Image 1 (cartoon, rainbow, N blue to C red):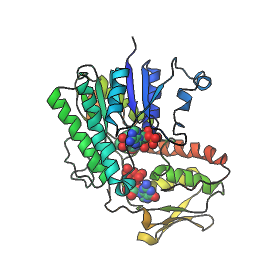
Image 2: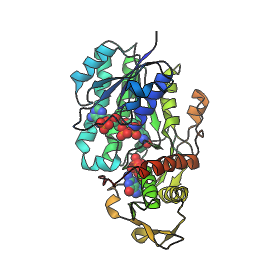
Image 3: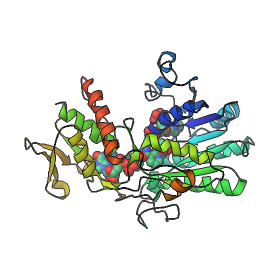
Length: 360
Ligand code: NDP
Ligand code: GDP
């Protein structure tokens, strides 16, 4: 009998990679999607349309259900109906900057939403059957108290998103300690891919580099170029979510590469991959990224993208995951990650006939 998994946030970057991984492992995969007036299933279409899954090495397709992390009765009904062995709670309002504009919704979805899910499993008497993965985040460390950050580093969140996820972290730990449930936190550092949302800084840069290289965009406006992040590849990180639920003990893990780069470094490398050598001139809000060959200004700083409170740097220590889960944090290097994203976006942009102006 194959295992049954339920993924909340299956339409997101991580949800789509995780669904692929679990299908490959022979799981029966269910996912919760939100009702939307336009399609929000672009990242997972290949996993439920018969003609598309024919080419994949999987036998079954995913099962989708309408639901929302703000709706307890819906979550209870779905969990009762699906009877999952594993739940991966990836659903969230996941954008830090947006969380300053929508703090209450972010708290409801990311914080209380986690409680609703745990409580649904408990109310249904499934505490001993169902293992739960909670998508925690390096944003919990915020104003960092220790470098690098590990499982024992104190938290100091710096955004409504970070604070909402802090609740999610502690309520998960509390249900584990109170009811002996197998529920764990993956404290994942930033992870990116060709499927990353277009308003996160990495994808914003790789798309802009591709468009500028193809003459479809003039300039890229960014916020804090000095921010440093520990960026990994999402496809490698979802493997860890699964490993955490197969582990013999319910415990929390930091998932990171152990390497940190600035936004400026990411942009320099991405533009290079797109065939443009950048040089940087000026400082602060007057800093500019200039095309070495033509002297044209391609990147400018736009204070609109600054955050009310910034997380200046994040660097994770993945030793525990490496040792106990046998996970390889350096499977995809920083350079390879940038290459994958730019290569994808060069092709993607070539098919675009007009530039979409996203809210970012
Ligand atoms: P995405 O933003 O790509 O995906 C978020 C998913 O959550 C989408 O499927 C979205 O649906 C869904 N969602 C949002 N609000 C609700 C709601 N109220 N009810 C139900 N579903 C909802 O995020 P990622 O895939 O990048 O991240 C996955 C998880 O990991 C998130 O919880 C995120 O906060 C966390 N995380 C991510 C990191 C990263 O670097 N990517 C780092 C650390 C943690 P829709 O498609 O309809 O919008
Ligand atoms: P986060 O780490 O979850 O906030 O992921 P983001 O990709 O949104 O941001 C990473 C870092 O890049 C943060 O420190 C941002 O302040 C910084 N940054 C600089 N310019 C931009 C920008 O134009 N958009 C975004 N999203 N972030 C930017």
